[in-house]
Image (cartoon, rainbow, N blue to C red; front, side):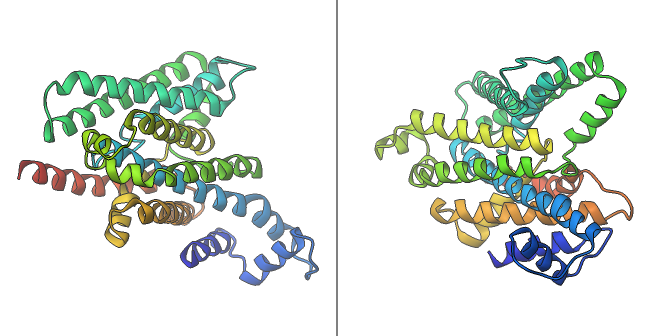
Length: 333
């Protein structure tokens, strides 16, 4: 928690305009109705309307994506499982773009609702394709089938999104959507925080409530059933929760990759594999990771803000390669 508060403090201080901690403290006191010295209105606006909601949204997105990675890796027994790699983020993007550009479900579906349906469709497609591909295989074969199905699903939904943009979006919409799809927290507002934080807390509560089932599922469905776990019900609830977390965060910040892959593996080194510790630790570490990635995206190139997905990919792609090699060696050995 101390590390999280330090990361939040750094996110508020660091930027094109460096703002002292004393100014941050005074702004917080004024906003919560306490007396404090007057603050420069520009600094006040930057902190309260831009940096603070952006930092909180980054924390919620990071926690949600890390939790999704923990759940998928346990349920699918695949260390490479992650909402981005398995195509959930791509499906959510397609759903959100369908609502925003085509008006699909207008008046009934919000952007987040469309993203949720898209994420569920993507997971269903990947699960069906992996099941058809692996046949009677197991171990390395089933892991490879799931990975390839995820790649195919992600490419399919990326292609659908590109088709929608090319056919129906004007130049300004296309430019904005492409930048958003690379992961973008620039437009963070308090309304986004009011949606992201409760959904993250709900997801954390549901997932933590199933920590014993997740421990059992890591040994396989048959082993979990022998322990009295209703595996079908558990998988339905947890995959639905994962799709909801991914969809909401994608609708607010775009598709940010590799958080759900890197953070759970890093946290396992620190707290072990028991989900009673892994779940809260991954949520905390995911929040810190994405806050720090957002800081890097703002300061790496002076005068320019990079899409946050670029920063997470620079960290995640090498980590993915390391995990893939270790997993392949473990399965062949």
